[in-house]
Image 1 (cartoon, helix red, strand yellow):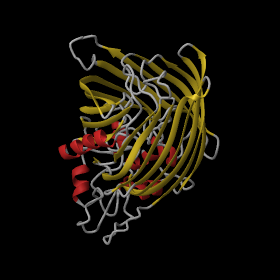
Image 2 (tube, rainbow, N blue to C red):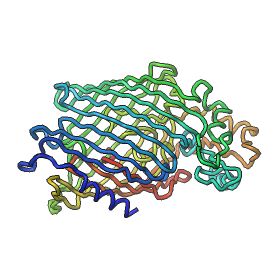
Image 3 (tube, rainbow, N blue to C red):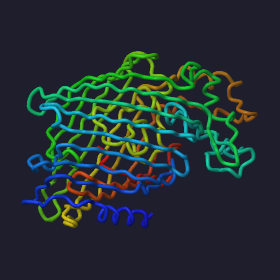
Image 4 (cartoon, one colour):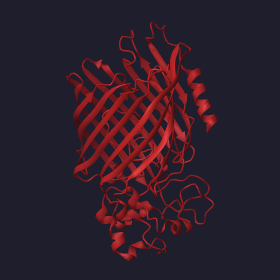
Length: 455
């Protein structure tokens, strides 16, 4: 792992393109950050490909905020065989007085992991050991007989979004946007010589008991509109030293399976004036968030979506992994409502100038926590508890291995530390290690390598 991090740092230093001359620590003209996607995760394995950001600062009058920013990625994951293609544009200056954020994303997951609904409730500590002993194993265990990936399915996703913000008063903006989604779901698509038994999966079991409805099991389309307010006093967007960034908005689908979600986010960045760190004062940052369906019901193919007005990362879905509660498996918590908090201390260790670019290195110890505020289809899943016949899964009758409603309100929490390398205060390479402390959700020593601070 150390080799991967060193390799990433070296490439950040050597592949950063030369920009125009600096005057008084102000960046002008074009700046490019290009990196190979040499990352590793418990969910998807090693990632091969490339990603980067393109910044245009003009005459430098808006630095460190760029006039225009273009982000892109093309990558492939060796363990899950996931393929990702991404292109995004972000600017507060394209249209005077309005911010434009748009992107196109395509993702193919032939071996996607589906862990069930409602997080801790989808795991029963009393029977899990016996359950796994009969070879209902996580994917990757191809030497088992039969070859079973109990948590496996496949999905393809195309997303096109465009979000806008306009000025109301100082620091207060209106926000509105539209997101189009096209999902294709199904059984695992394993092209290796050793095939998995695609009939013995949690996805098929949920379909059988009606937790995944027939008209949404194969995917579908969604056209979401969002509207709300944004309050922003940050001094720097990518890594603020001070300020507040708060959002409150509604997000709803107007196609089949209509629903309406309420979303609120409050982020606060507090500079700690210690004065003796040459690279800059530490910053204590925290985020309080709540997202919940308030009308209708979210279809299965959209339940993992985490609506955002401004996309900081390519993927904004699920609770777990790098977007919400670190230390969990990707999309481990699927529910109609979730509240969570993230806290971290951002400490710059050193800053320096290299190849006419400005860099700094920082660490960020953090603590995350969350709780389900509205479960997803709990009435259907309770049938597993009420009807003993539904406890039988391919002959296994050791108890309820699917669902335990007593666990829904368990506190989900984790902690860890991150390492950051930032170029020109905008292009930030991130590596984070985390450990989940909630029984049944532990993903071991979780690792996430990508770009940007989480919030």
